[in-house]
Amino acid sequence: MYFYPLSYQKKVEAWRRGEIDWDTGKPLEGAENAHDGVHYDKLAAEKIKRLTIYLRLDSMPNLLAFASLFGGNSDKPAAKLHPSKDVTLSKDANDASVTDVIPVRPVEAYGLRLLNLTDRGSSVMQVSEMDSYTAYDPVVNTFRTFGRLHNLAVSGEVLVVPESSFAETLGMRASDSDLLVLPWSETGGMSEQAIIEDKGTKNKLAASSYISFVNSTFANSSIPVAVLINKNFGGSKNKETKQRSRLTRMHSDISLASSREKVVTAPIQDRSHHVFFPFFGGNDDRAALRLVFQLAENPQVTATIVYFDVQDLFLASDTPSSTSQTLGKAGEIVTTSSTSGREQDVAFFAALRDSLPADIANRVVFETVTSAAPVKDVIARAGIEVGQAARNAGDLVVLGRNIGRNSVLSADDGEDEIASVSSASSTLGLLAEKVWEGKLGASVLVVKAAA
Image (cartoon, rainbow, N blue to C red):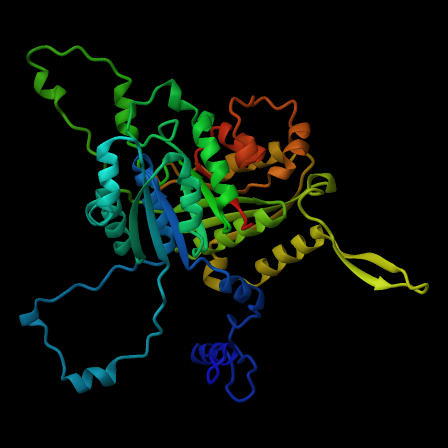
């Protein structure tokens, strides 16, 4: 770093791309892509380089699909030749013909599976054999293999701890990461055992034990936390099986063979995901915006980012003004407000919009709308954005947690037709609860900024 500082490295990269003149450092004529990317460079410096994922058996399909988005572009590899038919040049010729390729460091994904420590002797024995459990655990090994196939540097671990210590363990193990990913329970509680869907699991947000666990994880985590509430993300749910199960048939002896017919699910032809993110401002929304930008670097992801210009009362609790203290004429200290949090959020949003690289700008759309009823407007716009491509790999609504705005949003949304049937608003935020209960065709990702 002393001989090759960061500014010099950026100059070399821009010169290699043909964007600037080496001697003057000015952009070359005709280099349309040479734009001022200072703001995006700052954002890139805060990109997620290591994430920790809480591995749950009931959430593995959608967790793997979400983690694969951090792998970047997975181009189709070139066809291989048999060693005996691979006619190559000499070693020296090969070395001379190889072009310089700057390696890209992959995102590190650390999968953590937690098993409940009970009073049983078998549970105690698990603790003494943790190395073996980590090496042979099928969930961790599946995560390792899938991650390596999707350009991720992966590691995994199994820990046996009391259930009451799950949140504390996650916070401690993820302290050196940039993001902690929590899947919402598919079973309606802390249990990971697969069960047939019943009334206890139709409303995922009504799981009181899991709400308490997520609350404790928020409190114990010093890094950003993202909670994924799955709704067929990655195309894991077999729609054909669900539709066929609604039919009732009477089988005779002749038709018994046809009753054993298996439902075959075709490969996903459209692997794309569409992300919708309503931006209001505040720390949680800024952390969510950074995450959306990193997801949009994947060529299979498109995003619509809408800045909702709302009244000040919706933002009063989350975006305080920056103040400065000066010395008055009489020697007293005078406190003045220099820049409001609202203005900072507007500047932050505009700077990132104007400094996106061209390849990402083609997949991301920015809009600004004025709203007097944020909850209703977000649900209405989300209904337009997500769930339109029925055969893709699943859409995503990203929201900032912003629980400090619950009281104001609930007063504004008092006459909403969607009646809340869960108590997750105190954990995920009222907006996230309402969006999920709006039954949109997308999963929901709730982001909380670092403490």
